[in-house]
Amino acid sequence: MNKGSKYYSLFEHLRRSGQDEITLTFAKVEALLGGLPQSARSVRGWWSNRSEGALQAQAWMEAGYHVVELDLDKERVTFRKPVLKYNVKREGGAVLWTGDLVKALRAHMNLTQAQLAEELGVRQQTVSEWESSVYEPKRAMSKYLTLVAERAGFEYGKGG
Image 1 (cartoon, rainbow, N blue to C red):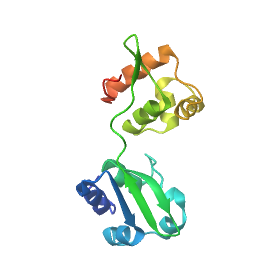
Image 2: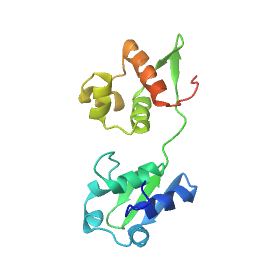
Image 3: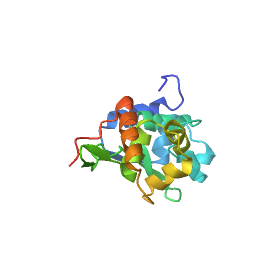
Image 4: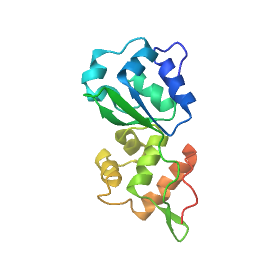
């Protein structure tokens, strides 16, 4: 996060909090930023965890957080650090990729579903269906996901 960014103070506040979860009022966010656009008070999308085109999201995501709860009526937002331990299942030494693990890899790589799909050579809908546990990646794709994860430095644990 660039020190010159209007969202740098939010980034620093979250980064220095040392908490796994932190809830801020809009007034606190406004005080940190020196103002808050009207859209932040009325449009849920302003608080989305998107990786492109939103400097405000870049601030909390680079600080290691995601917005997990938003109450527009009470004007408060909850940020949480993503879980760093995953239930990793293996079969014959190969990782069996689950929806949660795919979602965690995508978050680690800071990609949208469409971007991860492009990286893997599958459709965005396929990534969505994995993440929502409609079905799990087949064995060959699981091996490829493991390679992509290793290349991205995604540490998902030793598994059970």
